[in-house]
Image (cartoon, rainbow, N blue to C red; front, side):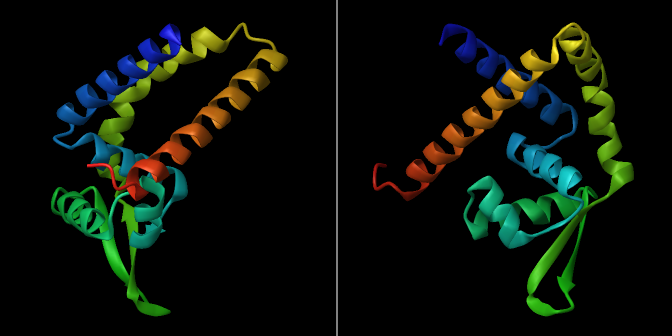
Length: 144
């Protein structure tokens, strides 16, 4: 548990440092990360992915669009939906800031066996499920 908490804490602090360099909030940056992986998404999908309210997502999208990180357009098939797309040239700065970390992670896992990598992937998948479950509990609870 100690190692997991320390890794989590350092991950959060690293993300805050990167976000500060990009003049973003961590939530904005994580939304961009999801968009970079997905290519594009609807505002509703971003709300589902981030577990934020639709109002919070709307505010986030306005900030990101004003800063030039995303474009938004109405879905031609359903004008009520908004399609959000990252602007590759703008998000490249974030990729540059992550590059050295990525190189270091590659060195860390370079000597891992296939079995060890499979274990790590399974571990991260299961931890993600635990985080998502708890995000849902927090979002849906009456506890202030």
